[in-house]
Length: 55
Image 1: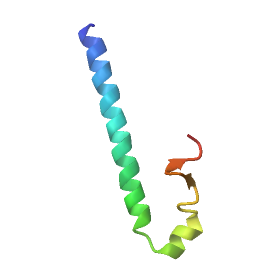
Image 2 (image 1 turned 120 degrees about the vertical axis):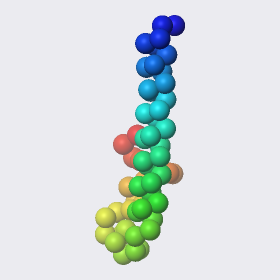
Image 3 (image 1 turned 90 degrees about the vertical axis):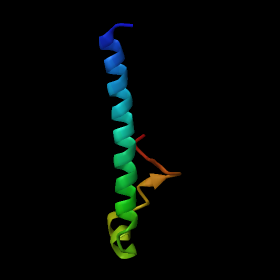
Image 4 (image 1 turned 60 degrees about the vertical axis):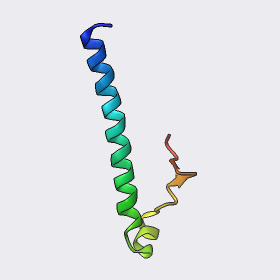
């Protein structure tokens, strides 16, 4: 493995961690909204079994 391949692997891993943290942060924010607002925007109906429908 070259140094470049190692760097790309680390960048990929860090990107995945960043995405997971952003999703968790968004879920916490959305769950903190009042129930009537969550219902108006369709939260959590957009999610089935904890995963987004588009996945």
